[in-house]
Amino acid sequence: MKAHWILFSFFSALLLASPATCAQSPAAQQPSKPAPAAAKAPAARAAIKPAIIEVPSGTQIPLVLENAISTRSAHRGDPVYFQTLYPILVHGHIVIPAGSYMSGQVLSAKRPGRIKGRGQILLKLTQLILPNGYTASLVGTPSNVGTGGGEQMGKEGQVKGPTSRASDAGVIVRSTVYGAGIGAAAGGLTGARSGLGIGAAAGLLGVLLTRGPDAELPRGTTLDVTLDRPIPLLASRVQFKTPGRAPQLAGPPNREPRRPVIPF
View (cartoon, rainbow, N blue to C red):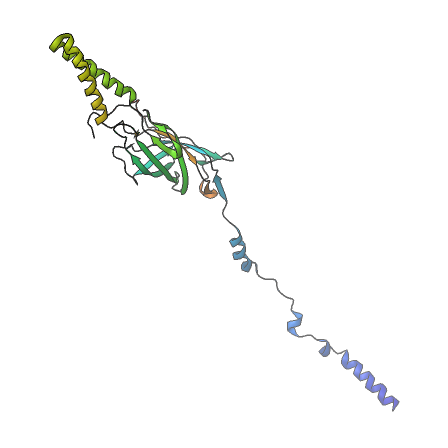
């Protein structure tokens, strides 16, 4: 009996140690494979954002006007076109070369009054077009206008026309002298006195019946635009190596503010 138990234990030990019982399933023997790199690529690309270069708020960009504007004929919505006169750099890199385009529109145009009030033009600049065709929106306020006349820059980018006080006084004086001369030729001293009054009245009437000088922005007018907000630009689209070329427009001629002759 003891011999049978020894044989049974021996054969049980052989069965437990056999390769068949120790073999593992094929699925268990295969190591886990890492996720392919291609599956991670879309997520990595989605996480990468294009580099942005910002032209900061408060930057002043000098411009020259391409189309003339006058309170005599301008209306709300009329387009205005400019070119930049000097390259703009950000962190030592040229982002807006000279000769770039900037456009906008007339927000309002008010003619001068017959007795008081100056002509007024309000401009709004809205778009930048770089030499490579890349466009960007902007919000800017004009300043430091140079028209060749007596126009001045008011609040919030409003261009105010010149006053004609000096020329009006000259009109009255000339009319007075002219009337006195005619009166003296017709009736001596008495006629001269009457002519003085008539001439002065005629000159004053002429001033009161006519409008003041219109606000004029001739072609070639220079002004600065101050950015009210930053301009975000794609870094890949503003890789300019040269400063560009400023437009060769002649500046506007010097003008004296004069009241129009025709009273309308």
